Length: 320
Figure 1 (cartoon, rainbow, N blue to C red):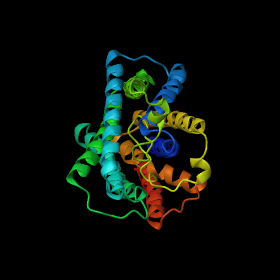
Figure 2: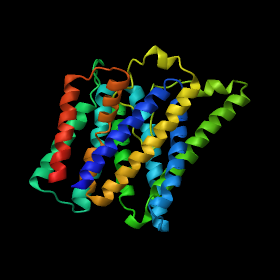
Figure 3: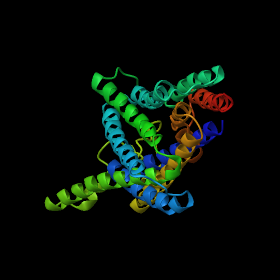
């Protein structure tokens, strides 16, 4: 099934976007990274719009706006739950829920069906999601009920993004994604603008608003975040680089995230929501691989197993 391969490719690109967002968030406040990536992604989608047609109805645009709202909800809940911790539990929980919610929608509501091999592939994919989302070395503690509820909520919001986008017509092209991203730009831009205005009124430097004050996380407008390496040890040469570099990293995050959205949309239109959701949730795999290449991070054995299972799940779902 071509959609499975496209979805898996999209997951890798999502992970790459999350990696850039996580690095940028070491120098810029997380909400600023999210706002900048939303804006740069919007530019990419608008430029690509004529290439994919734009015969959209009001309903397609409305679904796009709804998807953008779900993405914002996901970002807010994600930051909140990871600030509470522990990330080692809440990170993979969010990813698993983001896969299960649309998977159940596709199977139970849309009436999608797979071969026995395909159903087995879904199970393998869920196991892979947990393993690739594992954070080596973090002390495992019992999560609070509040943290669990927020993690589940974040996962449901990410899954809802997929469900909503899946409601759009094929003829609408990239229009739903454009309206989704525009919604993210308006909301995150308003938040950052309000923060800057508040700082000016209090006589504080605008730079203080840009400086990271929350968890070292970067997030994309669709709710994905650099979960797997949020606590990574970033080399000194990156941390001491100019803030302009962080801006460019945030812009690159948005470009890659918009590209991943395009792959995700194509996968949905080629195949089943249940398959696409399971493979898209493997996005931490892209972050892990890029961190190993760029930051020379060691990939834990359990993560290698997760990456191997991710490839196996992709193959099983492509065939099944």
